[in-house]
Image (spheres, rainbow over the protein chains, first blue to last red):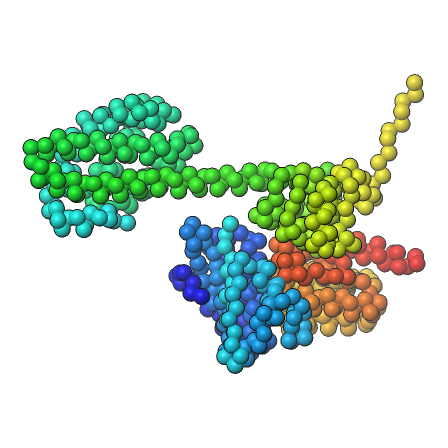
Length: 138
Length: 292
Length: 122
């Protein structure tokens, strides 16, 4: 999963709760700057919030990378959430509705998937998890 | 963007022909331009323009064309093509007309080269080697620029038609109606929801009637979206009443397992408005009949 | 950032003024649930107009809080959810079940007045 363009890529380290707020604020700002609709910017910020919290919850630390992307005349934003945590044993189940190992709502990943246009997850037990999501302008 | 093909060919054909060509085109500008305009008129292209406008535009295109040949860059031509497109698209100029005039100019200039070099076939050959790829690049640049601009205009128009076709109407204080007519694709569904939610906030509506009498069918995705819209409206403090469900849509909603406890539906728009008025505490009574 | 809680007659009003961390939201929940008992409040209003994101944690915590407040004898109404935020919430499947919502503070107060009046007449 390589983003097409890395011009104004932004990286946010996720180590504390405050970083969740920082990451989603940066995501919203970049989405608006790229000309995405305000509604899309809100969906992106919400997705980032979920992904950053997952990092904190399951891996303690990691990073959120925000990159502008292009496909023909369409512009978009890719959000990559990366950690070196314990990884997910059953990825298929983790993106099913109502599944959570943390005992909370268990809506994180399926919710994120519904918020965004594209969703991709890669995880290896003991090595970490990378979730890549994309949102395109209309 | 550079004139692709030109650099490669210039190894074979020395620089002399292109410089000669540019000089020749500049020297015969008035006559070639006139010939070109005559052929545009004969072909009945750009009929939306007056004679003076056509002449002025032809002059600009001619000069940009020669400039592109001379500088071997397409940037200024690209900019001009976009500017030209912006001006002529609103007047209904078609793609074939734009492509047509550029090809006519290419032909007029090519013929003048034949005339100039007719007694020296070797030189003519080199001249055409230099001229053809450059001329083709120019034609493509102008055509692509025009088509791109046209697509942009069409997209913009589609957007405004969509917005026009989904009004949110205030019928009474705190009561909105959103009549939906036609086909709902996912894009339009999203727009309908956004407009409704903004409408609720802006008019401080407490009840909304979404009338889908004019929608024959919807797929499961759109039906799900309708349910989400009802829920989102509730988060803003507004109740939604859906009216005019066709048998097909009722079936779709049952198939996706909609929670009927959360979605209030009434048979037709009139019934929906009456229900909304009841929710808002209105009581509508007929005025007393005047005594006969 | 701590959210100030105002006592207005029989109600408690919390107006969120900026983005909150998870800890801030948990703190708000605990403070409100505690104050409801101390002030013998009948209702709680939380104004979220300033929040541009309501994710699963914020929604879940506010919903838990409303249920806890109800167990301690008071009603909760969440006011000021922005259109785009509501849109994102329902897409996530976050619905605030069993929690009253209203457009703004004024509507929230009207709702609580109506509910508490009904309760007193019961």
